[in-house]
Image (cartoon, rainbow, N blue to C red; front, side):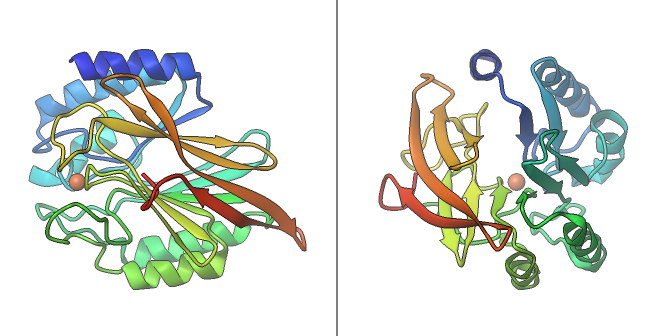
Length: 249
Ligand SMILES: [Fe+2]
């Protein structure tokens, strides 16, 4: 409860344009857990617009029935009012297992949606399971079953940022001209190694994108990466980057 209250206070102070929750709002996908989750999302919604994608825990026990009823659609497209960026959200969960997959139908949907996005916009995609391995998380598991197909689509479609959750360990990778950014856990103590409860903040402006990691426990914020962007032949792309530690977190 303390971490949740810290988070709500901190996010209120940051006054974001948009809040993305990358899944696992429940433990077992039960109806009463979704009651609490919906209340939490309402609290976030009172701060700013919120989009949520489901996680593997949310899909347990046919929990996605409750997700759709109490939280919202399992996939979404958000277009920034100023036309600067677009975010696509996908459901990577599978019933009752921890593995994740996007699947042919969502891949086809995403491809057609990305084709509609003007080239000069920043393209962001979010889903729960991690696209690439995350260091310091123990035995590697639960990378998306179709991660290769996704990587191909993202690179070919000019996706700039991928936002994931699941592992509870924040991390940054850059592959080709695309960033994959993993979030920690903001409101639990289910932490690995020396990590602390945290969430990621993306600051997007004309010249670049800044990624901050915020400690939900202390409120301490530090910049973990920044990216300079350019319009090259009218196409938005990352032209240089800087990580502020060995692995970017
Ligand atoms: Fe998860």
